[in-house]
Length: 192
Length: 192
DNA sequence: GAGCGGCGAGAACGACCGTTCTCTCCTGCT
DNA sequence: AGCAGGAGAGAACGGTCGTTCTCGCCGCTC
Image 1 (cartoon, rainbow over the protein chains, first blue to last red):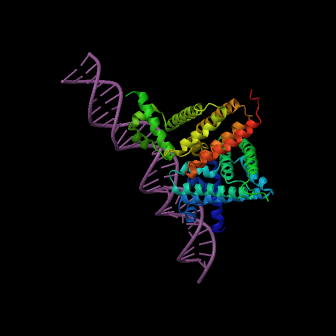
Image 2 (image 1 turned 135 degrees about the horizontal axis):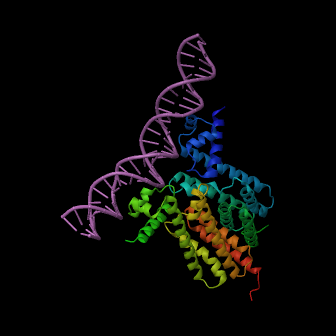
Image 3 (image 1 turned 90 degrees about the horizontal axis):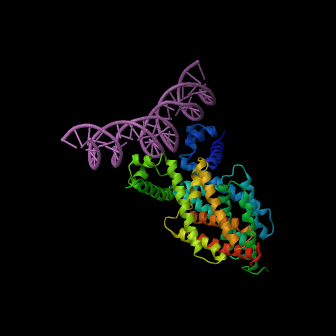
């Protein structure tokens, strides 16, 4: 078993546990047991718990970004691409393991106490807004639209998590349709 | 000094500390010191930390509900009342002490580990949606509108918290204007 | 004025956390 | 076969947490 295998397994286990129960509630010993790794090996791969946390945040960022992009690329028309992200949210909310956006959660848990976590969450959300901005620009929408859709997506995530139902994705999608259509009725550049 | 004074002071102090740094990061000793109360008196008024947490959640709920309602009542027209909640958000986000919605934060911190906190957060958000539902009904909007505006408000709260800027309130308000106007163009009942 | 009941300050306690250390055992090389 | 080195299990350590206990002090009552 290579060192990469061990790292991957630790991060995958921490992903599950941190997502399910929060970061502070999961101790190193529980993580060690669940990952099936000796404590020595754990600290050989990661110098501290906070380095594991950062690695998990990276994993969350990559998996969210890739999943979103893959879902968006299934649609062809720019308008459909803008709306596809809400279908991605719907799929995500429907999973049993869904317990809210890990970045919102980790920011709430540790943002005030760990500048690294706060900064990583900020950058993740910023990169999402930039991504939505590109989709909106491709659709020829004015620059107002992207932050509005981003806010809808964020709201759907917290609402779905707290309410415990995936309904928010549908509500957000229908709101997004109205906003997108209104924005495209006053495009920022001619349709050609 | 009456017992009520002490309770109020403890809750007010816990409010500040929990809001600023999260619940788990604030220990009983720090709370005791900041509130200027003996540890004995603290445990005389509250049997446990979790009972203080619940009391703070109640305070948050009351202060949010009252503040929102007061702001909404400043507007007369039903449409303005629906939009007024985003002005309330803008004022809130602009405060130095703003660090996100306490219910979203406490749910993220403790929701998975404390059913009481999770349930209280759920009920708080539900009561907000009911409130928005009344405002929307008064404006004669179809029932779709209320959850959409609620999601916008939630998204604005998390976006403003993580980004560290109050801009999200303005974005959410402009999105809400579009949604409200679109909804009122297809009213659920005649304008009379 | 003597006893007493309640108070504040803070020590103490048990549990748990993140991290390190020890000790044993297994493996692979010569 | 004998030895060196690394790995695993888990004890140990220092710190902190929520909670309780102790103790000395103050103001009240007879």
